[in-house]
Image (cartoon, rainbow, N blue to C red; front, side, top):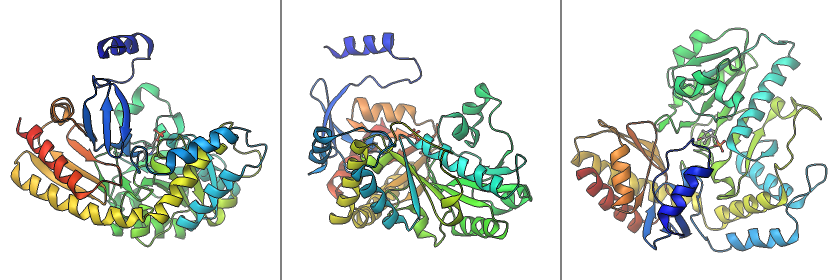
Length: 396
Ligand SMILES: *Cc1c(COP(=O)(O)O)cnc(C)c1O
């Protein structure tokens, strides 16, 4: 089918929620994407920080295909070996105690919130507990996750949402203290805010919240859906700070494109929910768990996190140079391979120019920030290429 035909049909069929770019991707290889016209693109968006290993990474597709031919769904009423293998590897990488597999990031957040509620219930707080979340956060689109997402634009049409959520300023410990009460049962935050514009937590902030939680038996929930799985230069971004969450969520890059997420719990949070408290039909099926298991093997064997550190500091240098060259770049933030460039102007036209004319895939985070979240396997030459194309797109 011709591109225009595909796009017209899509607009007739698909629920109109997204304003899609006029490109139909057909296949990928490494860190390159190819559209239906045969044009090649450099991918620095990774399907929204999902394709950590890029496309067709050696051994990954074969592992998924082998599992399809064996068995790929049996429900959670039975045991399956890929889920145990993936779980073991995740627990080893995170030092958490228990894992529950979900189909998405938002579902991982739902599970984390249910642990917080159950923990409060177990402490006899019944229904008057409160949860502290952050302004400019993003935790997902389902109603629970949306309730802790500090964005009026996303929330207002769907109010009323979960009650007793209080919003603090990210990286402002006093604003958290001001909201704290004996009803506070949990704090939920991203270790590095992603959609909100790439803001890493300060050590003082995350450490201070850990202390507040410890003092009053509240749970610290760290959302690592975007910044986790090696992207920050640590397997999980919180490992940089010497704090450990009671509950953590992961998803995006966990299955390298297979739809899998998870919530992991440690200590008392790991036993807060009991049999029958939660469930999922698809979650943790052998197919997606075989994918996650293979991803975790590849991370270890091919030293992916070390590579992120090396290439992440190179990307940092090059983006610093770019920022120095263009007055319209106001700020540069991030860690590893999750970096953001904040502009004094809306970034929509730059992203479109980069895609359509420079064949560079980039995504935004809010209206004024370009989010640089490439596959973790990019090389220095890919960074150089990206900088050249972005430089041209900005100039245009
Ligand atoms: C993307 C994202 C989510 C939601 O994940 P979905 O898979 O889209 O439901 C939750 N938290 C963070 C930090 C995210 O970046």
